[in-house]
Image 1 (cartoon, one colour):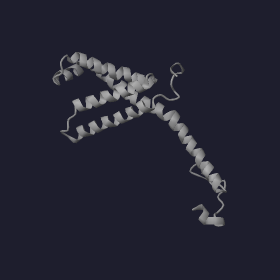
Image 2: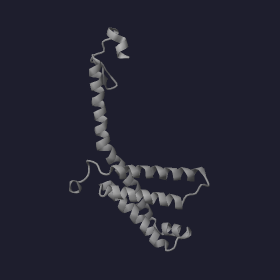
Image 3: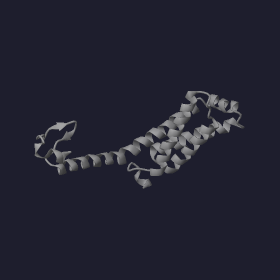
Image 4: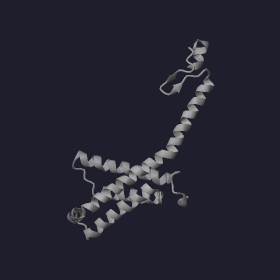
Length: 167
């Protein structure tokens, strides 16, 4: 498109529109786009893994703490579901969610924690899956989306925000 305009291109040098500076030559435009791309790459390599880990780990940590605060009701839920020794199941679920949630947030053994949590969410989703309503199907699909985020975390692991003693 630029070459078809030739010398008829209006002079917009120095005008900024939505954080974009118009340049004289095509090369300057390409260099400007490259610097924007490098900026986005820096954001995705620096901050996106940190934010993703905090959100995923915070979700499991919050849910685990909520279950711990409502422990008798949670044990009763396992008892009504027909599981043997519901007290141990409830304690195990809370331990998994809280400990591995903290591991994700703090970035300790991130890949292992994300992998264990992804297997855990898949198992819980299939054991308690109900397709009686649209809401139940949506909850199941949300769990599968969480598994996708956990698998991405397991695949890419830690980031630059990893504690120095762990590198």
